Length: 200
Image 1 (tube, one colour):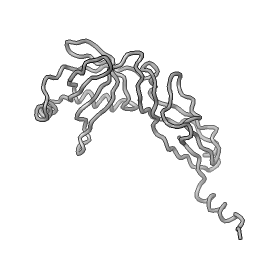
Image 2 (cartoon, rainbow, N blue to C red):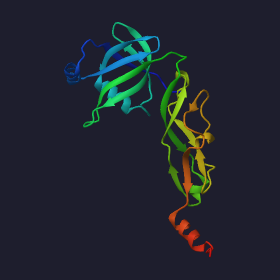
Image 3 (cartoon, rainbow, N blue to C red):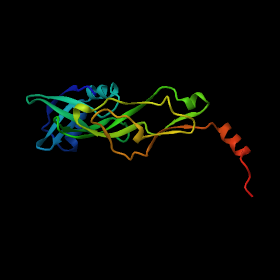
């Protein structure tokens, strides 16, 4: 299960593009909190602290205890990060207010573990899905989806439907979507092509 991180925030009274740019120059990152039954709140968080938080996280799908100055702590889910198109730096963050009954959608890294039988036999591991979109309640959010591929044979594929997901976690994509495949090396493909009977 994903660990909940604490992040300090403060109310943001300023708005408008010019004032937001000034806020960013001062080291703040404009943000907003919204959610069902919750009044939208304009906030600001420390840009450097937020960047360090992301750098040490396995994904951007984070549960956060947002400690808002003068308002107390609230549970939020990191919903959207807007980036500057030139620098790539975050310029705005959206948080979704959650409770233990709020279903969230997250993109979680897929980690393949073990050495496939097919790879030991000369095959090539091809990973097609490096993240998996899931839905779950906050308490069930995993840090990663770990998948044991040791039993995969040469030419076999692992599909979303084959994954053993943690309790309470559901994949949003179809069961037949391929996560990983053990491909045949080019030399073997060429050899099979050369020895295949010619159809006249």
